[in-house]
Length: 583
Image (cartoon, rainbow, N blue to C red; front, side):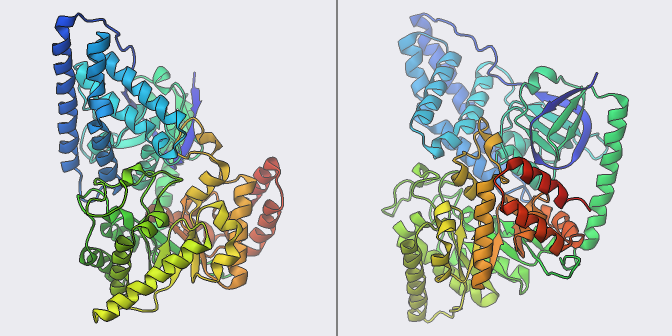
């Protein structure tokens, strides 16, 4: 009999495959008491396990292919830092000695203490690290228990049927090892819409459902499983008619994706001719090929912080200039929007700001010294980046985007530094574009609610919906325990997004959306009806959004969306959203 499990749909698509189960090492951890003579041996065993895992992470990082998602390297670097932290790599040895317990239990005890401390201090940054800490501990436990830390992988080869990975959680290191393997889908017990698994699955175009309770309890190796990444459903032991129905849907989807490629050179216009710009988000200069291949109208968000990560020092002005120039040249006259350094929360440095007065950036949090706050506290670093951008702007149209603006004072301060950077370049007789538009990211409610003040200083604004939702709803977007509360259709979120788009439109200031909402086709018509004409998303989402826009009647959509923005009734919003997609 078919058994249905449900989770969070984070990457669309359908898979009908055999399951490859990655069990967790945290089951049935023995708590053994040891005698004093065994302490030295147990400590040595622990040290060896830590070293093996450290070596493995280095080896895995060296295997990252050039065309892998940029997040891989950043995530692996973070795991190496967690592993090296004395709290995990040294303190368990003290527990072994003081409590006379085995290494596995000492590690588990220390992990629990660490996670409990994180929760108690209510620091978003540390809470977001919980899943990473568990993944690192999982790897060390496997090494201690003599299990292979490398998980069983699907066979390589084009002729192999894809396998469906079912796991408690999937670490970045595990993801790297899947490169080149035939993976049909991901199903995990942990995770939310912005978890590692979700981000990488979307980048690779693999269907994924996360946050599926007790998945490991019900799924066994080799089981036939159906995954519907659109609705977040997982069907176990599916009846023949269920399999046939999903195979039919799968075939239709494959044909649809092939057909979508014909739209690469088609302009995005609604049925009534309203032009919509579809832009793409990138992390590194190498990502620009995907933008060109998708036929994007430009780069709507170049997350420049990835140029600063996974290195031992700040990038120089010339290094940054070359990176920006490469993207600008590749876009051949299409606009490139570069967000200035947005460190903090889940994006940290490998070094601690040596040779500067900056505090260790790894200590920043989602609510702390991050984004524009960090740049303003470190003017030398900010000025270096702005000079590089102004110099690169002579090669094509560039816009500078200031992240996480909260008040006018910091906006004025940032603009003053930009003027200062221009003057410094003039003094050095560098040719630089002096007319680069300056925009701001609206991603905290304070900025959204006081937008008119910001519009008088900015040439354009971009709504960062990921953080705007997080801060509006007080939901940590990577905490699986509250992931179900992260709702882009919450009336408060809709009201803020609508007000920002409307206010900008009335003021004649261009506005775009660059968060996950922009690439979610369930929300495309909603944003269009609010008046949005610039979307920026992952390149893999662009053609789906374009196809829907081509089939959309703007005026009819606008009438329904006005009703959505006037109600706080969640059920009514759901009903109106269904009407929006009735063609």
